[in-house]
Image (tube, rainbow, N blue to C red; front, side):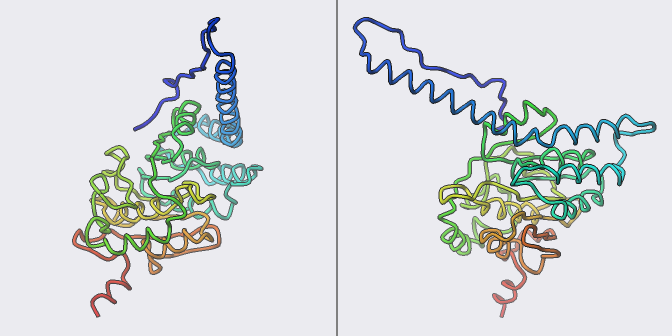
Length: 312
């Protein structure tokens, strides 16, 4: 469910000092309170810095373009505005930002997408405002594993549509999980299904209903975290993206799926397993671009090569 930071309350432990109370307990409670406050301050400072780095330049470009003569809110962004947005977003000092060459293919697809374009992004990142701006005529939804950060971003940028999800996967399980799903592709881990009712371990099933009902034209996998053994990894995001693309009910039969950090083991292996090599149209160390088509509901194989192998 969507969270609102405005409803969040900070509770500090401040014990009532009584003569008969234990002084050591009072000191302990005071230390815990200070540590809690320090943690929240550090978190907010970090997120503010990482998000606000693209705000000034992006907002200035959009404001300038939208205030010009003859501007229509439904009109596509001009080539000059798109170039400016990509330029300023790629010039940040943020270590985790995308480069111009990584953002350009995504931007090109969004520009060619028939309006309105539906864009789903896994991960709230340095480029969040950029994707929202480039798809200004369409629907853009962001999914993130950090409920506090998602609520913070929505408070600062009310136009951002973000939801948090509780991933049940761990990076240390990446080998076991792919074997588990392979055994269940004919049952709960089918390539075509309504994930809202799915029991598949890799399927994300706790998002709002409209996320599953939407026919997504473009999906970007740029999260969640995968830097430690106990972080979620992108296994569920890649699997969920593949099912959403194959389970479309209407609109364009094709879905563009981009996987960032394509050099990673999880990105390569899970993309090959669920997005399929025959659907890969462009790739580099940092970005994989797949185009998937809607599948028949009776399908039990994600990839053509496995279907042919099974039929042989």
